[in-house]
Image (cartoon, rainbow, N blue to C red; front, side, top):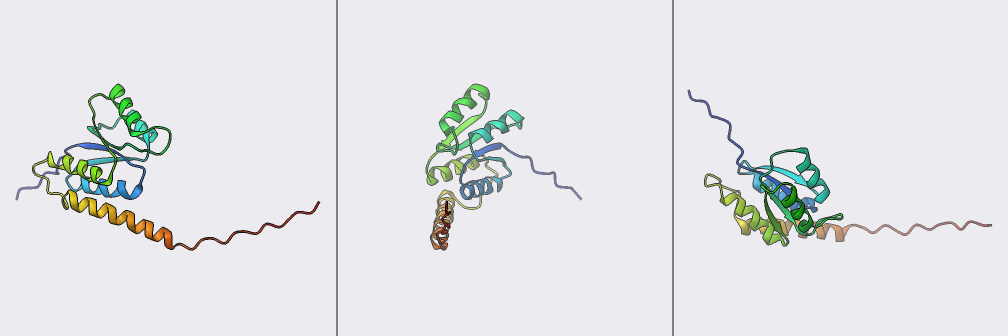
Length: 150
């Protein structure tokens, strides 16, 4: 009986996205095709990952990042310090889904869970649901402070 060899990871993507819902969905989509995904919230996290040394082949980053550095600033840093890393910058939900799909399209044996339109729809639905839930949360009553007498 022949044994199956473990599947080889095809690429390692550093995914830099502040929004946890978007980051989770994109990472999950990429992982369906045996891509290793390292997640970062902002430019500082991404630089820490790159300095720590895992072999990263693609940086997939939002242009608008939390904190001090934008995706453009991060891309400049990567160009200077890790020039072999391919850089993909995204802005809209549709461009993020398209970038993930483009990465998966490089692997002919990959069969992702849905296409770009499906991923875009999923992302938009998740963000809309979060927005709806936030609107439904009861607002806290203002706290009355006692006056201090002199």
